[in-house]
Amino acid sequence: ADLPGIVACIRRASPDLPESVLTDAAGGWVELAPHIALASVGPRTVALGSDVLVHQARAGAVRPVADSPLFQRARTLAGPGTAYVVLLDPSGPPGGLPRLGGAALRIGPQVAVSGALVFDRIAAAGRAAAWFSQILDALDAGHSATAEPPSGESSATPSDLDRVIGALVDASLVLRGPTLSFDARLPVDADFAGLLAEALRLLPSLAEP
Image 1: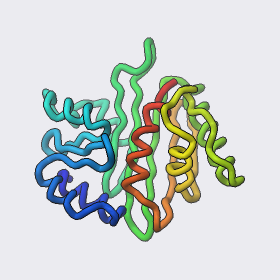
Image 2 (image 1 turned 180 degrees about the vertical axis):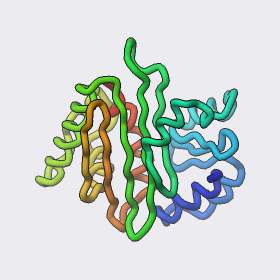
Image 3 (image 1 turned 60 degrees about the vertical axis):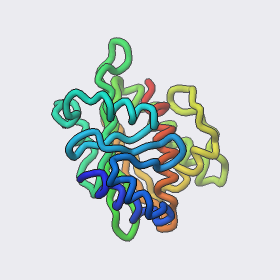
């Protein structure tokens, strides 16, 4: 999948995105939300996240990331789907293992997201699962998502968490050793592009030990 194909897929899930993003995609760079960019960084490879980091990835790529064995393992974690995203931190925490993860997007009657995150310790994966469970329980009870993320620090506000996690329908979490697998569907009327941008802002705090 090249950048125009990925952006066309995202626009199907989020019709509010202007048609101009398709033209931007043909030029290799798309701004999905303020300071969140999606850009081509090589053949069938794109970078997604902070516009500053995406620009650096686009300018400084030495070899295709997809050639990395760690990338291939993370790609497997994402599973099958219309499109996928990979989380890869080769260095990991001090003295720890690399952080790997992936999520696949499926578009049908409803938008579905599934995948897995591998933490460096079972306890870290357990804390992330407990964090998700606590927030989902609070939202189910009609309260705001005020729980701290697993790292204990985040620039995200409760409303950010509400928008992302509150949009999940029938979310499931499976903890197996240091691996946390997840599967969720979004309501038909969800703002997919906006939720994606918020999720990207929250992802670094989730990946912390």
